[in-house]
Image (cartoon, rainbow, N blue to C red; front, side, top):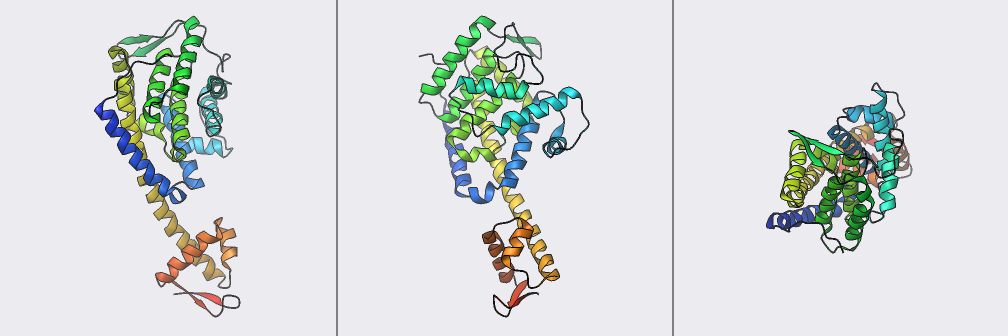
Length: 321
């Protein structure tokens, strides 16, 4: 069986250990950290990040507007790229990462309105530009199908840790450069899909947005691996990025959770001021929260001496303190 060239280093082992610890923390707190709202925020960050790496600067606000069905200003190509990325990531949780046909499906969704050959491997020679001109000439097109089949066979059968395996795949994919356009976006998407199939909590980790923040280092790691003749430098770089992304996600999720909790407190108090006899079920419908979530907020407000119940549960009313 084909095995891509790379070496396991002490740095990789260290990163794998740290990432595994951080992911355990997210999984323990996933109910509070991975809310539908935060999943949407992270998906928007992911879309903005992967598009900006390719020179599309529509940004999070315009992507949000497009997701909400609103019209935005931008070139025709920019908007098509955003719409394609939205469609490709919409299927994020359904892709079978071991199936090459699924990768072709993702590319078709991403590029269907941009490339006539969307969903098909390239039939032309391509070179990848670097700071000093062409830094890498991709394999000839007639070799691409076999190279991709070999890579997917390794992906399916390798016992390597998913963190390392996903990073090796990412580099090898970019080296082969199987499509005439969209390779960077698909390579980053597929690494995220592999990681999601290892730990579902990766749905809350927008790795692409961190790669965007270290874009120059990202391209340098690819070039260094090409010079070195194996993906080792790129794997070390990506593991570092994944760890940064996880820590950043946890920090932002905690911050948003605290902020949302404070906002919910204010909304509850405002609603009960307007209607002191409102039930917890009515509050949950008004706030678009579960009844259990409202009960927890009410209990918190009571403990903080901001709210009290006067009379019985059935006939009484709420009093703002």
